[in-house]
Each structure stands twice: as C-alpha cells, then as structure tokens.
Length: 139
Image 1 (cartoon, rainbow, N blue to C red):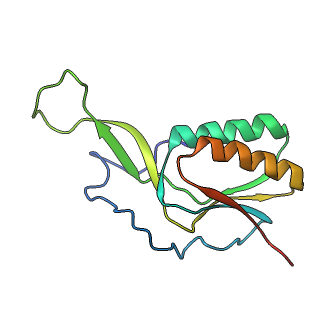
Image 2 (cartoon, rainbow, N blue to C red):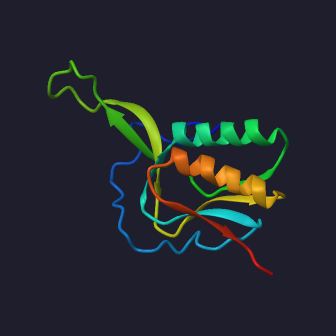
C-alpha cells in the first residue's frame, strides 16, 4: 500500500501543476518488463484508487508478480469541512494525488500470460476516470 510521501511539511507544495495535453517524455517507453498500461488522456490518480487496484491484482493472481509503478504521489489535496466559515487558514490534507500525463506508462508487469494481462487491464480500466491502453514489447 502506498503511504503519504515522506519529507513534506506544512502543507506540502505551494504551487500548482497544470495538466496539459502535451505528451509526457519521461515514462513513455517500457523499460523493464513485457507489459505496460499507458494513459491516453491526462488526469489524476489518488492513493485510494491505486490501493484498490493493487488489492485486486493481489487477490486475483494470488502469487508474487513483477510490478513497477511509475506514479508517485506529490500533491496534497486539502479541503475544509462544510460547516466551516470563510477564513481561518488552509484546510486539512484529505488525500494525496499524482498527475498522470498523456502517453505516460503507469504500470509495468512481468511474468504474466496474455489472459491474465487482459483481465487485469479490464479491472484497472474500470477503476480509473481516464482512458488507458495495453502495451507490450515485441522482440
């Protein structure tokens, strides 16, 4: 399970990251494993969404698999209670989220069959708000 990032104090970042539709160049190739899940659209992923995806993968496969996550949670989402009046500072951190760029490979999988990978892809696509596609290395 992903935890809150270490090293953040006093509310985390003080600037906002704007999501543009330009193609991400840092994680757009499969580097280590055979299969990958690539984002077609830009969006956000929260730590609760990622935890539910990882839990489903562990329950379905029931064995150790090789998995690499390219998502890191950097941005805290703060929110005040509904009954709060205006003012009185910044609200509490509700959850952490990660920006997903168009063309970014979020997950990399190794040692899976084609049927297992297709089933995992369907599970993950039901849990996310943006479009994804399945990638694989062809030698």
